[in-house]
Length: 155
Image 1: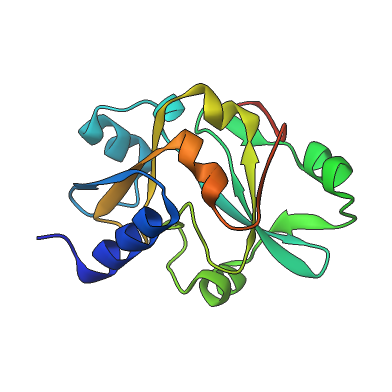
Image 2: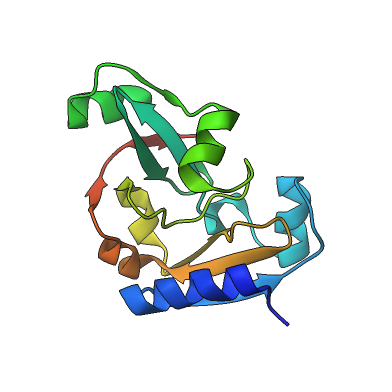
């Protein structure tokens, strides 16, 4: 039986038109082991980075085999100061534990890296350490306030 909070989140994704599928797995914070367990590689996953950009927060989604390029993000969006959210800020903004970020965080502007769209499906966080969610990448553009931009570099 899928956890209630994960079910509610998946229902939200479905309501937005974002195709999704839940995978239950042993609870872990060790990312490489989780990928092995699920039979995935870094290029199959979608980390969500919560970042502080000047005076507001952003959700930045990149493919797992790439890295967010802070210079590109700053230049593309006219940001002066850009950094990762602190653990306290992450928790306050998302209501989640660090390491469990979801692809959709209501109220945050979401930047989708162009490399995401090269794959049909990617797997990301569910808000918990014991579930992951595979999403249809083309549907991510349906996230309210989302924008697609070239904001990554090779890992």
